[in-house]
Amino acid sequence: MGIKWGYLAGKPQRGIAGVQFLSRWKNITWTGFVRLGYDENVTVVMTREHCRLALYRFVELPGAKLLRALGLTPNVITVMGFCICLLASAMVAWGWLVTGGIVFLLGGGLDLFDGGLARLNGSDSNFGAFLDSVFDRLGESALFIGLAVFFLRNDLPGTSILWVMIILLLALVFSQSVSYLRARGEGLGVFTKSGLMTRSERVVILGTGLVLDGLIPYPVMIWALGLIAVVSCFTLIQRMCTIGNILNKGR
Image 1 (cartoon, rainbow, N blue to C red):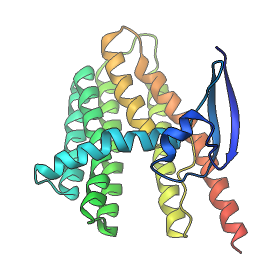
Image 2: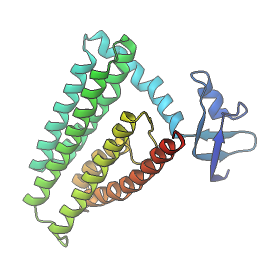
Image 3: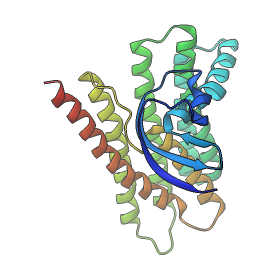
Image 4: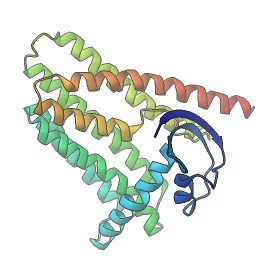
């Protein structure tokens, strides 16, 4: 069996097993990098859109149904997720990295369900989307503050605290700029989720980095922040180009 990377553009091909599996839910048109896995008879294609659809069917939708059965509303879930992120930030600042990472992943995971529950109830609204966006940014920023406090309170052998703070600030600025650019584009009538480092990826990297940093004697979190800073910068450029091209074509 061989694995290679390819570039696929256009409509799904029904002869491809991975697309057949997902084409029952939605007629998808996409352009993006895909991973092609080969055996003798079957080619499996998986894109980010496929992952999102699978996540919606097997995680988001069942979770939204459970939360609806508990009588929770989308806005309550949004606020709950933010409060959990605040708790994670306090844990990280205090030095409980493993627990804080797990709690942060839980709080970030709740972000999957507020929009899904709103769509399930038919109650999605502009105010709910606005509230979700604001609390997402605040919750993520709170974790960066918790990390800054942790780094300032603890000596990092062989590491300059100045460079750590610079990396952390770059990660914060670029990641927030990516989210702002999406919101600004939507305000101009351009809807895009293009880019490698979206909020979902940042949540996973931050949470996993915290857990690993607390388990092994290596500054995993610093490398995680560096990864977020570099790839978020690249994502920012991607989105600027995408939005700019769409706006120029609309003239």
